[in-house]
Picture 1 (cartoon, rainbow, N blue to C red):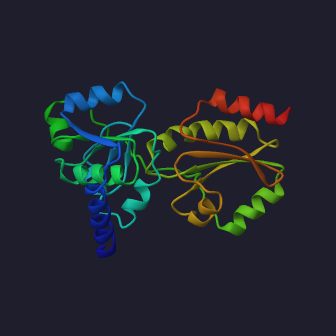
Picture 2 (cartoon, rainbow, N blue to C red; picture 1 turned 90 degrees about the horizontal axis):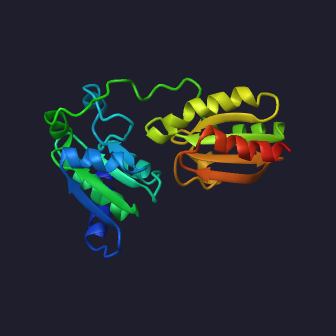
Length: 239
């Protein structure tokens, strides 16, 4: 925990000296809601698991501010997306916004007053579990090498449980796995638990899809994709 704290302080000091064009702002609950509804950005909840049990904003990615890997996980968010960050009352999320900007996020928006302000404004709250996924896999480098050597075509979804865009991709990947059974080996990998494999493949953000043919990468995409878009790529590869 101490190491995480000092790393966080160091990056925030870097932020205070940063003069680049990246920006952050603070919005009221109503403004925050309107902003992300008119954008394809990422909502980020930095509260604890216990706090999340009392509800959260629908489709929020969730990274505990006190997680020892907090900074590392923030670094896996797509840099070209606006991040809409919040906590309980606004303190942690303000620090998280500064850290995100220091890490290179193009734009960050903080919810003034946090989740308390959101609830006070009677805005919608979700209570569904966001961390269940029975099919996500943990791979070692040896596991990875074995899989791609055994199959001519392999599509891997590099994914994390805390990432909302990843969760949206899960049912699509499940459908594709069934549709292409026997033709393409398709599955998703937990990037947090398979760091060596992610590093070996230069995965910098989630979700990232990578297609291998005869053990060589032939295509990749970072961010949400529709099933139709992925099918178009896979069909072209099979032709």
